[in-house]
Length: 506
Image (cartoon, rainbow, N blue to C red; front, side, top):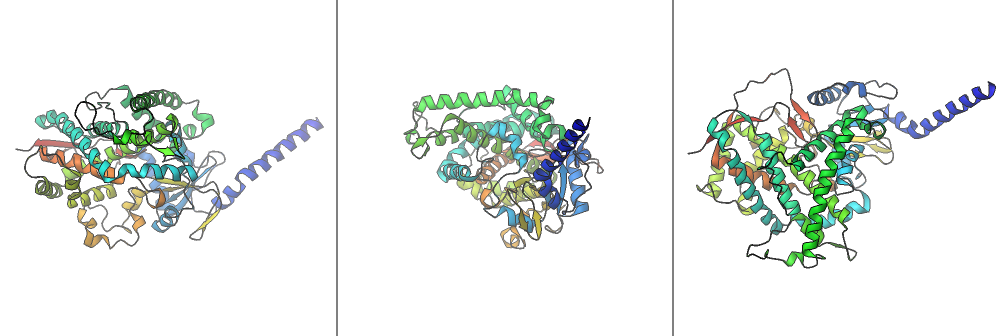
Protein backbone atom coordinates (compact mmCIF):
# COMPACT_ATOMS: atom_id res chain seq x y z
CA UNK A 1 0.00 0.00 0.00
CA UNK A 2 2.83 2.34 0.94
CA UNK A 3 4.64 1.52 -2.30
CA UNK A 4 1.48 2.26 -4.32
CA UNK A 5 0.97 5.59 -2.56
CA UNK A 6 4.62 6.54 -3.10
CA UNK A 7 4.31 5.61 -6.78
CA UNK A 8 1.22 7.79 -7.16
CA UNK A 9 2.95 10.72 -5.44
CA UNK A 10 5.99 10.38 -7.68
CA UNK A 11 3.81 10.11 -10.78
CA UNK A 12 1.87 13.21 -9.75
CA UNK A 13 5.05 15.17 -9.04
CA UNK A 14 6.48 13.99 -12.36
CA UNK A 15 3.37 15.06 -14.22
CA UNK A 16 3.38 18.48 -12.55
CA UNK A 17 7.08 18.90 -13.37
CA UNK A 18 6.47 17.90 -17.00
CA UNK A 19 3.56 20.33 -17.33
CA UNK A 20 5.60 23.09 -15.72
CA UNK A 21 8.50 22.50 -18.09
CA UNK A 22 6.19 22.25 -21.09
CA UNK A 23 3.71 25.01 -20.32
CA UNK A 24 5.05 27.00 -17.35
CA UNK A 25 6.65 29.76 -19.40
CA UNK A 26 3.61 29.98 -21.69
CA UNK A 27 1.15 30.17 -18.80
CA UNK A 28 3.25 32.62 -16.77
CA UNK A 29 3.53 35.23 -19.51
CA UNK A 30 0.22 34.37 -21.19
CA UNK A 31 -1.72 35.16 -18.05
CA UNK A 32 -0.11 38.60 -17.91
CA UNK A 33 -1.94 39.49 -21.11
CA UNK A 34 -5.54 40.68 -20.80
CA UNK A 35 -8.20 38.12 -21.64
CA UNK A 36 -11.23 36.23 -20.36
CA UNK A 37 -10.92 33.79 -17.44
CA UNK A 38 -9.88 30.33 -18.66
CA UNK A 39 -10.70 26.87 -17.31
CA UNK A 40 -8.24 23.99 -16.84
CA UNK A 41 -7.65 21.82 -19.93
CA UNK A 42 -10.31 23.46 -22.15
CA UNK A 43 -9.20 27.07 -21.62
CA UNK A 44 -11.78 29.32 -23.30
CA UNK A 45 -12.90 26.61 -25.69
CA UNK A 46 -16.31 26.47 -24.05
CA UNK A 47 -17.11 29.91 -25.48
CA UNK A 48 -16.99 28.45 -28.98
CA UNK A 49 -18.86 25.20 -28.42
CA UNK A 50 -22.25 24.96 -30.15
CA UNK A 51 -21.62 28.24 -31.95
CA UNK A 52 -22.71 28.74 -35.53
CA UNK A 53 -19.98 29.72 -37.99
CA UNK A 54 -21.27 33.31 -37.95
CA UNK A 55 -21.24 33.37 -34.13
CA UNK A 56 -17.52 32.44 -34.09
CA UNK A 57 -16.63 35.85 -35.54
CA UNK A 58 -19.06 37.69 -33.27
CA UNK A 59 -17.57 36.01 -30.19
CA UNK A 60 -14.03 36.98 -31.21
CA UNK A 61 -15.19 40.55 -31.79
CA UNK A 62 -16.79 40.63 -28.33
CA UNK A 63 -13.56 39.44 -26.70
CA UNK A 64 -11.49 42.07 -28.54
CA UNK A 65 -14.00 44.79 -27.65
CA UNK A 66 -13.91 43.82 -23.97
CA UNK A 67 -10.20 43.14 -23.49
CA UNK A 68 -8.51 45.41 -26.03
CA UNK A 69 -6.61 45.33 -29.30
CA UNK A 70 -4.04 42.90 -27.95
CA UNK A 71 -5.65 40.22 -25.80
CA UNK A 72 -5.43 36.49 -25.33
CA UNK A 73 -7.59 33.39 -25.26
CA UNK A 74 -6.72 29.78 -24.48
CA UNK A 75 -7.92 26.90 -26.64
CA UNK A 76 -6.90 23.95 -24.55
CA UNK A 77 -3.17 24.46 -24.00
CA UNK A 78 -2.80 26.69 -27.08
CA UNK A 79 -2.27 30.38 -26.33
CA UNK A 80 -3.80 32.65 -28.96
CA UNK A 81 -3.08 36.38 -28.89
CA UNK A 82 -5.68 38.35 -30.84
CA UNK A 83 -4.22 41.51 -32.40
CA UNK A 84 -6.04 44.43 -34.02
CA UNK A 85 -3.38 47.00 -33.09
CA UNK A 86 -1.68 48.34 -36.24
CA UNK A 87 1.58 49.13 -34.40
CA UNK A 88 1.92 45.57 -33.11
CA UNK A 89 0.98 44.25 -36.55
CA UNK A 90 3.73 46.38 -38.09
CA UNK A 91 6.34 45.25 -35.55
CA UNK A 92 5.68 41.56 -36.17
CA UNK A 93 4.72 41.38 -39.84
CA UNK A 94 7.49 43.69 -41.08
CA UNK A 95 10.27 41.84 -39.28
CA UNK A 96 12.29 38.93 -40.72
CA UNK A 97 12.46 37.52 -37.16
CA UNK A 98 8.81 36.46 -37.07
CA UNK A 99 8.36 34.38 -40.22
CA UNK A 100 6.99 31.18 -38.69
CA UNK A 101 3.28 30.67 -39.28
CA UNK A 102 0.93 30.00 -36.39
CA UNK A 103 -0.33 26.52 -35.56
CA UNK A 104 -3.56 27.21 -37.45
CA UNK A 105 -1.64 26.83 -40.72
CA UNK A 106 -0.89 23.23 -39.73
CA UNK A 107 -4.53 22.50 -40.49
CA UNK A 108 -3.91 23.05 -44.22
CA UNK A 109 -0.57 21.22 -44.17
CA UNK A 110 -2.13 17.82 -45.03
CA UNK A 111 -3.28 19.48 -48.26
CA UNK A 112 -0.41 21.88 -49.03
CA UNK A 113 2.56 20.15 -47.40
CA UNK A 114 5.52 22.51 -47.04
CA UNK A 115 4.53 24.85 -49.85
CA UNK A 116 5.19 28.58 -49.88
CA UNK A 117 2.32 29.35 -47.49
CA UNK A 118 3.34 26.93 -44.73
CA UNK A 119 7.12 26.50 -45.08
CA UNK A 120 9.70 28.53 -43.17
CA UNK A 121 13.42 29.16 -42.94
CA UNK A 122 15.70 28.28 -45.83
CA UNK A 123 13.01 26.31 -47.63
CA UNK A 124 10.64 29.29 -47.63
CA UNK A 125 13.35 31.65 -48.92
CA UNK A 126 14.21 29.19 -51.69
CA UNK A 127 10.58 28.69 -52.76
CA UNK A 128 9.86 32.43 -52.67
CA UNK A 129 12.82 33.05 -54.97
CA UNK A 130 11.67 30.32 -57.36
CA UNK A 131 8.05 31.47 -57.58
CA UNK A 132 8.52 35.25 -57.82
CA UNK A 133 9.29 35.21 -61.60
CA UNK A 134 5.93 33.49 -62.19
CA UNK A 135 4.23 36.85 -61.78
CA UNK A 136 6.41 38.68 -64.31
CA UNK A 137 4.24 40.89 -66.52
CA UNK A 138 4.93 38.77 -69.63
CA UNK A 139 3.53 35.70 -67.89
CA UNK A 140 0.69 37.77 -66.44
CA UNK A 141 -0.34 38.82 -69.94
CA UNK A 142 -0.98 35.15 -70.75
CA UNK A 143 -2.95 34.72 -67.55
CA UNK A 144 -5.16 37.67 -68.56
CA UNK A 145 -6.22 35.72 -71.67
CA UNK A 146 -7.51 32.98 -69.38
CA UNK A 147 -9.27 35.53 -67.16
CA UNK A 148 -11.13 36.85 -70.19
CA UNK A 149 -12.09 33.43 -71.55
CA UNK A 150 -13.43 32.17 -68.23
CA UNK A 151 -15.22 35.48 -67.59
CA UNK A 152 -17.00 35.00 -70.93
CA UNK A 153 -18.31 31.64 -69.72
CA UNK A 154 -19.28 33.31 -66.45
CA UNK A 155 -21.53 35.92 -68.08
CA UNK A 156 -23.08 33.21 -70.25
CA UNK A 157 -23.92 31.19 -67.15
CA UNK A 158 -25.70 34.23 -65.70
CA UNK A 159 -27.91 34.78 -68.75
CA UNK A 160 -30.84 32.82 -67.34
CA UNK A 161 -30.68 34.75 -64.07
CA UNK A 162 -30.77 38.06 -65.91
CA UNK A 163 -33.78 36.95 -67.94
CA UNK A 164 -35.70 35.87 -64.83
CA UNK A 165 -34.98 39.10 -62.96
CA UNK A 166 -35.09 37.18 -59.68
CA UNK A 167 -32.70 37.67 -56.79
CA UNK A 168 -30.08 34.93 -56.50
CA UNK A 169 -26.81 34.12 -54.73
CA UNK A 170 -24.03 35.00 -57.16
CA UNK A 171 -21.23 33.53 -55.01
CA UNK A 172 -21.50 29.91 -56.25
CA UNK A 173 -21.11 31.15 -59.83
CA UNK A 174 -18.09 33.26 -58.89
CA UNK A 175 -16.33 30.49 -56.99
CA UNK A 176 -16.70 28.06 -59.91
CA UNK A 177 -15.29 30.67 -62.29
CA UNK A 178 -12.35 31.31 -59.95
CA UNK A 179 -11.70 27.57 -59.74
CA UNK A 180 -11.63 27.32 -63.54
CA UNK A 181 -9.20 30.24 -63.73
CA UNK A 182 -6.81 28.92 -61.11
CA UNK A 183 -6.87 25.38 -62.48
CA UNK A 184 -5.94 26.55 -65.97
CA UNK A 185 -3.29 29.03 -64.84
CA UNK A 186 -1.82 26.79 -62.14
CA UNK A 187 -1.87 23.43 -63.87
CA UNK A 188 -2.53 24.21 -67.52
CA UNK A 189 -5.59 21.99 -67.47
CA UNK A 190 -9.33 22.56 -67.34
CA UNK A 191 -11.68 21.26 -64.68
CA UNK A 192 -14.68 22.96 -66.34
CA UNK A 193 -16.18 23.72 -62.93
CA UNK A 194 -18.60 26.29 -64.37
CA UNK A 195 -20.02 23.69 -66.74
CA UNK A 196 -19.87 20.81 -64.25
CA UNK A 197 -20.40 22.26 -60.78
CA UNK A 198 -20.96 18.84 -59.21
CA UNK A 199 -17.53 17.50 -60.15
CA UNK A 200 -15.68 15.40 -57.60
CA UNK A 201 -12.77 17.85 -57.45
CA UNK A 202 -15.03 20.85 -56.80
CA UNK A 203 -16.75 19.03 -53.93
CA UNK A 204 -13.39 18.00 -52.47
CA UNK A 205 -12.14 21.61 -52.38
CA UNK A 206 -15.31 22.73 -50.59
CA UNK A 207 -15.09 19.88 -48.05
CA UNK A 208 -11.45 20.60 -47.23
CA UNK A 209 -12.18 24.30 -46.66
CA UNK A 210 -14.96 23.33 -44.23
CA UNK A 211 -12.66 20.95 -42.32
CA UNK A 212 -9.94 23.55 -41.90
CA UNK A 213 -12.40 26.11 -40.52
CA UNK A 214 -13.73 23.63 -37.98
CA UNK A 215 -10.20 22.93 -36.77
CA UNK A 216 -9.67 26.61 -35.96
CA UNK A 217 -12.11 26.82 -33.05
CA UNK A 218 -13.80 23.45 -32.56
CA UNK A 219 -11.95 21.95 -29.53
CA UNK A 220 -12.55 18.37 -30.65
CA UNK A 221 -11.34 19.02 -34.19
CA UNK A 222 -8.42 21.28 -33.24
CA UNK A 223 -6.15 18.69 -31.63
CA UNK A 224 -4.74 15.78 -33.63
CA UNK A 225 -5.40 13.26 -30.88
CA UNK A 226 -9.17 13.92 -30.95
CA UNK A 227 -9.48 15.08 -34.58
CA UNK A 228 -8.99 11.52 -35.85
CA UNK A 229 -12.16 10.45 -34.04
CA UNK A 230 -14.36 13.09 -35.67
CA UNK A 231 -16.24 12.88 -38.96
CA UNK A 232 -14.13 15.83 -40.15
CA UNK A 233 -11.11 13.53 -40.33
CA UNK A 234 -12.96 11.17 -42.66
CA UNK A 235 -14.09 14.12 -44.75
CA UNK A 236 -10.50 15.34 -45.00
CA UNK A 237 -9.20 11.90 -45.99
CA UNK A 238 -11.71 11.64 -48.84
CA UNK A 239 -11.02 15.18 -50.04
CA UNK A 240 -7.23 14.76 -50.01
CA UNK A 241 -7.44 11.54 -52.00
CA UNK A 242 -9.34 13.36 -54.74
CA UNK A 243 -7.29 16.58 -54.76
CA UNK A 244 -3.85 15.01 -54.50
CA UNK A 245 -4.81 12.36 -57.01
CA UNK A 246 -5.86 14.99 -59.52
CA UNK A 247 -2.74 17.13 -59.05
CA UNK A 248 -0.43 14.10 -59.20
CA UNK A 249 -1.98 12.91 -62.45
CA UNK A 250 -1.58 16.34 -64.06
CA UNK A 251 2.06 16.61 -62.92
CA UNK A 252 2.89 13.19 -64.34
CA UNK A 253 1.16 14.04 -67.60
CA UNK A 254 2.94 17.37 -68.00
CA UNK A 255 6.32 15.93 -67.00
CA UNK A 256 5.93 13.19 -69.57
CA UNK A 257 4.90 15.71 -72.22
CA UNK A 258 7.87 17.97 -71.62
CA UNK A 259 10.47 15.43 -70.58
CA UNK A 260 13.03 16.95 -68.25
CA UNK A 261 11.54 20.43 -68.73
CA UNK A 262 14.83 21.97 -69.89
CA UNK A 263 13.29 23.51 -73.02
CA UNK A 264 9.80 23.95 -71.62
CA UNK A 265 9.75 27.73 -71.51
CA UNK A 266 11.07 27.94 -75.07
CA UNK A 267 8.01 26.13 -76.39
CA UNK A 268 5.94 28.74 -78.22
CA UNK A 269 3.27 26.66 -79.91
CA UNK A 270 1.23 23.64 -78.95
CA UNK A 271 1.75 21.75 -82.20
CA UNK A 272 -1.49 22.80 -83.91
CA UNK A 273 -0.61 26.43 -84.57
CA UNK A 274 -1.89 27.96 -81.31
CA UNK A 275 0.43 29.74 -78.92
CA UNK A 276 1.01 27.72 -75.79
CA UNK A 277 0.16 29.34 -72.46
CA UNK A 278 2.75 28.78 -69.78
CA UNK A 279 1.09 27.52 -66.61
CA UNK A 280 2.47 27.83 -63.08
CA UNK A 281 3.18 24.08 -63.17
CA UNK A 282 5.27 24.50 -66.32
CA UNK A 283 7.44 27.09 -64.57
CA UNK A 284 8.04 24.67 -61.70
CA UNK A 285 8.89 21.80 -64.06
CA UNK A 286 11.53 24.00 -65.69
CA UNK A 287 13.03 25.11 -62.35
CA UNK A 288 16.42 23.92 -61.14
CA UNK A 289 17.63 24.16 -57.55
CA UNK A 290 21.36 23.48 -57.21
CA UNK A 291 21.21 22.02 -60.70
CA UNK A 292 18.45 19.55 -59.86
CA UNK A 293 14.76 19.64 -60.84
CA UNK A 294 12.04 19.74 -58.20
CA UNK A 295 10.55 16.32 -57.48
CA UNK A 296 6.85 15.56 -57.90
CA UNK A 297 6.02 16.12 -54.23
CA UNK A 298 7.73 19.53 -54.15
CA UNK A 299 5.87 20.55 -57.28
CA UNK A 300 2.56 19.30 -55.91
CA UNK A 301 3.05 21.35 -52.74
CA UNK A 302 3.42 24.58 -54.71
CA UNK A 303 0.69 23.82 -57.25
CA UNK A 304 -1.77 22.96 -54.49
CA UNK A 305 -0.74 26.12 -52.60
CA UNK A 306 -1.37 28.21 -55.72
CA UNK A 307 -4.74 26.49 -56.15
CA UNK A 308 -5.65 27.10 -52.49
CA UNK A 309 -4.53 30.72 -52.27
CA UNK A 310 -5.87 31.74 -55.65
CA UNK A 311 -9.31 30.14 -55.55
CA UNK A 312 -11.49 30.88 -52.53
CA UNK A 313 -9.72 34.15 -51.70
CA UNK A 314 -10.34 35.67 -55.12
CA UNK A 315 -13.88 34.30 -55.25
CA UNK A 316 -14.71 35.91 -51.91
CA UNK A 317 -13.30 39.27 -53.03
CA UNK A 318 -15.24 39.21 -56.30
CA UNK A 319 -18.48 38.07 -54.67
CA UNK A 320 -18.57 40.80 -52.03
CA UNK A 321 -17.58 43.41 -54.62
CA UNK A 322 -20.39 42.41 -56.99
CA UNK A 323 -22.94 42.74 -54.19
CA UNK A 324 -21.48 46.10 -53.18
CA UNK A 325 -21.78 47.38 -56.74
CA UNK A 326 -25.42 46.27 -56.76
CA UNK A 327 -26.11 48.10 -53.50
CA UNK A 328 -24.21 51.28 -54.44
CA UNK A 329 -25.47 52.17 -57.94
CA UNK A 330 -23.61 55.48 -58.08
CA UNK A 331 -20.31 53.63 -57.57
CA UNK A 332 -21.31 51.02 -60.16
CA UNK A 333 -22.06 53.75 -62.70
CA UNK A 334 -18.65 55.36 -62.21
CA UNK A 335 -16.94 51.97 -62.59
CA UNK A 336 -18.97 51.23 -65.72
CA UNK A 337 -18.19 54.63 -67.27
CA UNK A 338 -14.48 54.06 -66.67
CA UNK A 339 -14.64 50.61 -68.29
CA UNK A 340 -16.29 52.08 -71.40
CA UNK A 341 -13.69 54.82 -71.53
CA UNK A 342 -10.87 52.26 -71.48
CA UNK A 343 -12.38 49.39 -73.49
CA UNK A 344 -14.88 51.13 -75.77
CA UNK A 345 -18.48 50.13 -76.49
CA UNK A 346 -17.82 46.66 -77.92
CA UNK A 347 -18.70 44.31 -75.06
CA UNK A 348 -16.66 41.52 -76.64
CA UNK A 349 -13.38 43.44 -76.69
CA UNK A 350 -10.95 41.41 -74.54
CA UNK A 351 -9.28 43.36 -71.75
CA UNK A 352 -5.49 43.39 -71.94
CA UNK A 353 -3.24 43.75 -68.92
CA UNK A 354 -2.51 47.34 -69.96
CA UNK A 355 -6.23 48.14 -70.11
CA UNK A 356 -6.86 46.55 -66.71
CA UNK A 357 -4.07 48.66 -65.21
CA UNK A 358 -5.81 51.80 -66.47
CA UNK A 359 -8.97 51.10 -64.43
CA UNK A 360 -7.99 53.35 -61.54
CA UNK A 361 -11.43 53.97 -60.04
CA UNK A 362 -12.18 50.24 -60.18
CA UNK A 363 -8.90 49.73 -58.32
CA UNK A 364 -10.10 52.09 -55.56
CA UNK A 365 -13.44 50.28 -55.46
CA UNK A 366 -11.71 46.91 -55.05
CA UNK A 367 -9.63 48.30 -52.18
CA UNK A 368 -12.71 49.67 -50.46
CA UNK A 369 -14.54 46.36 -50.82
CA UNK A 370 -11.53 44.52 -49.39
CA UNK A 371 -11.55 46.98 -46.51
CA UNK A 372 -15.17 46.37 -45.58
CA UNK A 373 -15.04 42.63 -46.25
CA UNK A 374 -11.50 41.41 -45.68
CA UNK A 375 -11.19 38.36 -47.91
CA UNK A 376 -8.66 36.72 -45.58
CA UNK A 377 -10.08 37.56 -42.14
CA UNK A 378 -6.98 36.58 -40.17
CA UNK A 379 -3.22 35.96 -40.47
CA UNK A 380 -1.06 34.14 -37.95
CA UNK A 381 2.51 33.97 -36.67
CA UNK A 382 4.09 31.69 -34.08
CA UNK A 383 6.60 32.94 -31.54
CA UNK A 384 9.55 30.54 -31.42
CA UNK A 385 11.04 32.18 -28.30
CA UNK A 386 10.09 34.86 -25.78
CA UNK A 387 9.87 38.25 -27.47
CA UNK A 388 9.29 41.70 -25.99
CA UNK A 389 6.98 43.39 -28.49
CA UNK A 390 5.97 46.95 -27.73
CA UNK A 391 6.31 46.40 -23.99
CA UNK A 392 4.54 43.02 -23.86
CA UNK A 393 6.18 39.63 -23.52
CA UNK A 394 4.90 37.19 -26.14
CA UNK A 395 6.12 33.82 -24.81
CA UNK A 396 7.55 31.04 -26.95
CA UNK A 397 4.75 28.95 -28.40
CA UNK A 398 2.29 31.85 -28.69
CA UNK A 399 0.06 31.90 -31.75
CA UNK A 400 -0.44 35.54 -32.74
CA UNK A 401 -3.53 36.14 -34.88
CA UNK A 402 -4.09 39.41 -36.77
CA UNK A 403 -7.64 40.33 -37.76
CA UNK A 404 -7.86 42.66 -40.79
CA UNK A 405 -11.65 42.31 -40.69
CA UNK A 406 -11.85 44.10 -37.33
CA UNK A 407 -9.03 46.56 -38.08
CA UNK A 408 -10.61 47.65 -41.37
CA UNK A 409 -13.91 48.44 -39.67
CA UNK A 410 -12.37 50.31 -36.74
CA UNK A 411 -13.27 54.05 -36.66
CA UNK A 412 -9.85 54.75 -35.14
CA UNK A 413 -8.29 53.68 -38.43
CA UNK A 414 -10.96 54.59 -40.97
CA UNK A 415 -13.34 57.53 -40.86
CA UNK A 416 -16.97 56.36 -40.92
CA UNK A 417 -16.04 52.74 -41.65
CA UNK A 418 -19.66 51.72 -42.31
CA UNK A 419 -19.75 53.94 -45.41
CA UNK A 420 -18.70 52.46 -48.76
CA UNK A 421 -16.43 55.19 -50.18
CA UNK A 422 -13.88 54.11 -52.80
CA UNK A 423 -12.58 57.68 -52.92
CA UNK A 424 -10.88 57.16 -49.57
CA UNK A 425 -8.25 55.21 -51.53
CA UNK A 426 -7.63 57.95 -54.11
CA UNK A 427 -3.97 58.95 -54.31
CA UNK A 428 -4.59 62.40 -52.86
CA UNK A 429 -6.37 61.03 -49.76
CA UNK A 430 -4.62 57.70 -49.13
CA UNK A 431 -1.66 59.57 -47.61
CA UNK A 432 -3.89 60.35 -44.63
CA UNK A 433 -3.32 56.84 -43.30
CA UNK A 434 -1.21 57.04 -40.17
CA UNK A 435 0.06 53.48 -40.39
CA UNK A 436 0.08 51.33 -43.56
CA UNK A 437 -0.38 48.22 -41.42
CA UNK A 438 -3.92 49.25 -40.51
CA UNK A 439 -4.89 48.04 -44.01
CA UNK A 440 -3.37 44.68 -44.94
CA UNK A 441 -5.72 42.81 -47.31
CA UNK A 442 -2.76 40.83 -48.70
CA UNK A 443 -0.83 40.63 -45.43
CA UNK A 444 2.39 42.66 -45.35
CA UNK A 445 6.13 42.46 -44.90
CA UNK A 446 8.39 39.63 -46.10
CA UNK A 447 5.51 37.11 -46.17
CA UNK A 448 2.99 39.25 -48.00
CA UNK A 449 0.86 37.65 -50.71
CA UNK A 450 3.07 37.01 -53.72
CA UNK A 451 0.06 36.74 -56.02
CA UNK A 452 -1.74 39.99 -55.21
CA UNK A 453 -1.21 41.48 -58.69
CA UNK A 454 -2.59 38.27 -60.18
CA UNK A 455 -5.66 38.52 -57.93
CA UNK A 456 -6.35 42.19 -58.69
CA UNK A 457 -6.04 41.60 -62.44
CA UNK A 458 -8.44 38.65 -62.25
CA UNK A 459 -10.96 40.67 -60.23
CA UNK A 460 -10.79 43.57 -62.67
CA UNK A 461 -11.21 41.26 -65.65
CA UNK A 462 -14.32 39.54 -64.32
CA UNK A 463 -15.92 42.75 -63.02
CA UNK A 464 -15.34 44.59 -66.31
CA UNK A 465 -16.78 41.68 -68.31
CA UNK A 466 -19.82 41.41 -66.03
CA UNK A 467 -20.64 45.13 -66.04
CA UNK A 468 -20.39 45.36 -69.81
CA UNK A 469 -23.10 42.70 -70.09
CA UNK A 470 -25.29 43.32 -67.04
CA UNK A 471 -26.43 45.98 -64.65
CA UNK A 472 -26.23 44.80 -61.05
CA UNK A 473 -29.31 45.53 -58.92
CA UNK A 474 -29.94 45.15 -55.19
CA UNK A 475 -31.71 41.93 -54.25
CA UNK A 476 -34.57 43.62 -52.40
CA UNK A 477 -34.33 40.94 -49.74
CA UNK A 478 -34.57 42.52 -46.29
CA UNK A 479 -31.82 41.77 -43.78
CA UNK A 480 -32.33 41.24 -40.08
CA UNK A 481 -30.26 44.07 -38.51
CA UNK A 482 -29.95 42.13 -35.25
CA UNK A 483 -28.21 39.16 -36.84
CA UNK A 484 -24.84 38.91 -38.55
CA UNK A 485 -24.37 36.29 -41.23
CA UNK A 486 -20.72 37.12 -41.97
CA UNK A 487 -18.56 34.03 -41.54
CA UNK A 488 -14.78 33.90 -41.15
CA UNK A 489 -13.68 30.53 -42.46
CA UNK A 490 -10.54 30.18 -44.57
CA UNK A 491 -11.99 33.20 -46.35
CA UNK A 492 -14.79 35.61 -45.51
CA UNK A 493 -18.24 34.69 -46.72
CA UNK A 494 -21.88 35.47 -46.01
CA UNK A 495 -24.05 32.64 -44.70
CA UNK A 496 -27.11 34.32 -46.22
CA UNK A 497 -25.48 34.37 -49.65
CA UNK A 498 -24.37 37.29 -51.80
CA UNK A 499 -27.77 38.16 -53.25
CA UNK A 500 -28.16 40.36 -56.33
CA UNK A 501 -30.39 40.83 -59.33
CA UNK A 502 -29.23 41.29 -62.93
CA UNK A 503 -30.56 43.28 -65.84
CA UNK A 504 -29.11 42.83 -69.31
CA UNK A 505 -27.66 46.03 -70.71
CA UNK A 506 -29.22 47.17 -73.98
